[in-house]
Amino acid sequence: MTQLPVYQFDSSQFSILNFFSSTIVFSPTTVWIFIALVGIVFIILSLVLSYHWKRFGIDMWVMGRASILYFSVSAFLWVIMIASLAFYLSSL
Image (cartoon, rainbow, N blue to C red; front, top):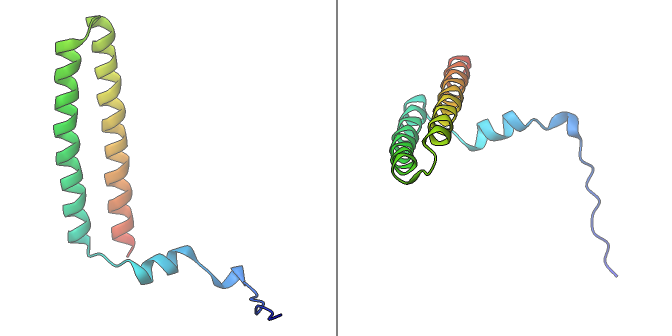
């Protein structure tokens, strides 16, 4: 019976940031273009969702509150995403 070699993993030498920075390399311009495209798709889908909420919503009060909550949380997440991306790219 053959025995498999035993591999000792030293976690102190492994860094996830070093691993990803060496395997996935994008220029800042590419990342900003990707974020802009995601933003455009998000805006289009949000407009479609908003239209359907207004058109087919049964209770306008609930639909109004849902759209305000949706757009405020979405704006908050977009601000955090853009700020973290800008912070990350400035640290490179």
